[in-house]
Image (cartoon, rainbow, N blue to C red; front, side, top):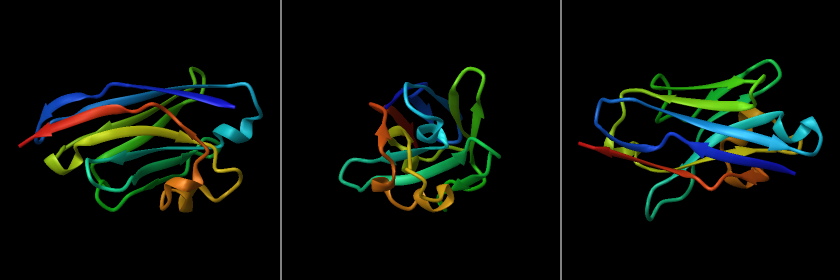
Length: 130
């Protein structure tokens, strides 16, 4: 069982930056945190994979719409996953969720489908004004 708590959302003007943080704790095996990532959801839209990261080896994968602007990273000592978001656009607005636990499914593929992740945080809101 893993628990994920996001922070760092807020309001920013287009072109600005935000950094999100996800503090995770688990009482189960390390498998639950082997692959972690971020999804987002805008009103009226489906959840979209933003970024994923293998915590062993730190391989990262990004959604097409954020590649080159967002960076996912991991602080293993403090059990925090970050999402650095630069050059934000109005289209980046939405609720951002920290996710974990693909139950062995390849991390670089899991970003394509929200159902691949077992554990979800409550989300943190990002609003980008144009």
